[in-house]
Image (tube, one colour):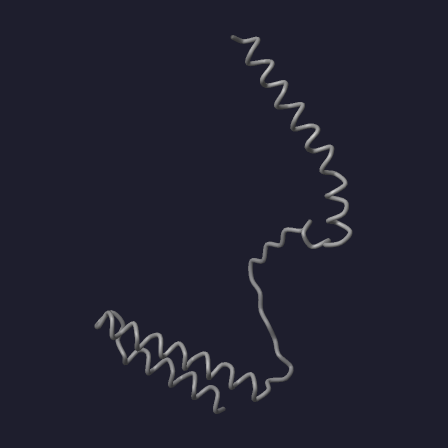
Length: 101
């Protein structure tokens, strides 16, 4: 029984070796044509600073908040009492106040 196991293990190891060996040209090709596929990026914290804030950006933000409010209202109608409207109105009010300044 041990002999069969050893033979099977050897076959798997040889197959893995040749698989890795023949994948090297593909890895070189990928590294040349798409180098970012070889990199794993782990970001703990990211921040963005804008030098210009255009009206188009503000409109996009307003559209996103309007869509979020629509989704909130839809959710509130389906599941009443889960989230209070007062909290949502306070949040939107503060966002709109910040956009006006």
